[in-house]
Picture (tube, rainbow, N blue to C red):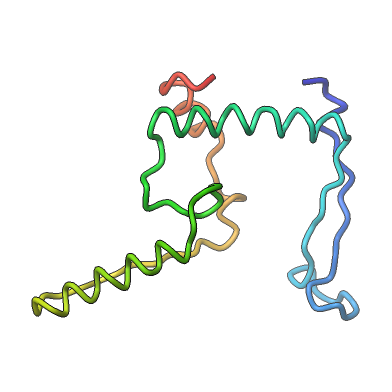
Length: 120
């Protein structure tokens, strides 16, 4: 990919539509060249196909996956809790939302793992 396709123009938008006083009350928007976006869409299609063909993600992973509905997953969780209550056994759940998880990702480690999985 040419280096100029990787150059983005960053714009900060206010989350609360008020005057921006605190940087934490903003979210960045990146404006990328059209060819960069087109390349990304083509790559994403191939990458998703590879992930699905190789069973990389478990079926329970529903976020950001086309054809996987969070509402269906929620009904499944409620059903599992109901089954546990019916047979009088314990039921536990752990739900984690990592704040700024993307910014904390170890990209070198991710690339190494993808390479070991023969990711194209």
